[in-house]
Length: 475
Image (cartoon, rainbow, N blue to C red):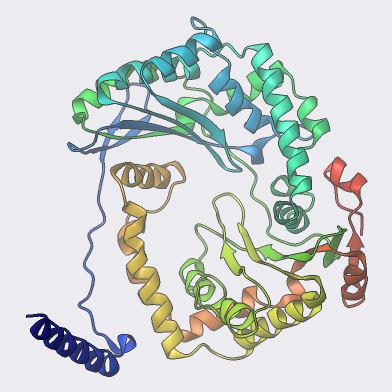
């Protein structure tokens, strides 16, 4: 019996080995992926606030997200950090009828999760709870937005935490490099202004109230909801949000020009660290940019995938880095940041910068191969479905499109427009974004390394005083 088993096993192994030897996964053919973009049910509250609802009968948790147009880009001059502090003050500051501690206790008692945060262009408030307690959680959340207390003690604690977060950025070379690159690219504009200890500590309760009046109004808000509750039940649960102020209209932020205002190309920070932190970037694209789709394909080929040219040359072929990549942030009110980032051993800094330059130039001068183009488009089209991995993700997608006035059919046409990108489109976008003379660079590392690379570009050293003040050296 054992002999028979061994014979069968050997035969299977031989057959498997033969199949493996003859099968090339790169030549495998798969049927086209057909995926219909999910839609939401859209309802409108009495005060005009739109709500996107996805009913999921199998869900064990109900979630509501409040999307708020406007963020740190709308912070007044000298008040960097105000939108972030507003989020903390709303979350932790209590309501007219509930102390901050009472709010925490109410959410703890029903095991609900609450968060309120602002980014550059928008804020998000999230509450998740079991369906039986969802109505109670939403009622408290609505009161936080319609009748905030703004408890002074809690605001002081939030300011102290924000100051500590700023200090931690200075202690993390990678995060510091990214922050400084943003400042260098958007120098002198709201997108390039960062919170400092001074700006955070200058914020007052009156500042927070003014930001609240400016941002928290019905015309600035879209809701997204998922869970087992019916559409009618959800609309009833959301009734407290009908008390949101109408306000004076949508929050508008003056768009950036997307033009680099500084002549300095290289900014350096001296730190005694074994690896240099390298960041390169320039203004990228907005949501309405006609090069949106071609830029996504270019990015995949250049540095946005594990098989990208940057990854293959710097990591796979030469072993100069563990992490390297590129990324387009898509801006709504201003061109988002196009970034190239990596870290490498100090002695390899100049070589890595040269190789990045060479790869950029190769894409500017020569068209990509048909194989690269097809592979990038297939990957982008097939990964599109992951943006709809949950009911809440679907509701959020629909709500964001409305919040930022995306054109009708944006999601439905996305894959078709990626598929339509041609070789010439990719090269045109490469010529727009990969001319290294247009970049701003930030390198953090050993003093001697910085001196060597500074000879090749117009450079400025960022002192500790500059870092504390949140400003870059003048040209």
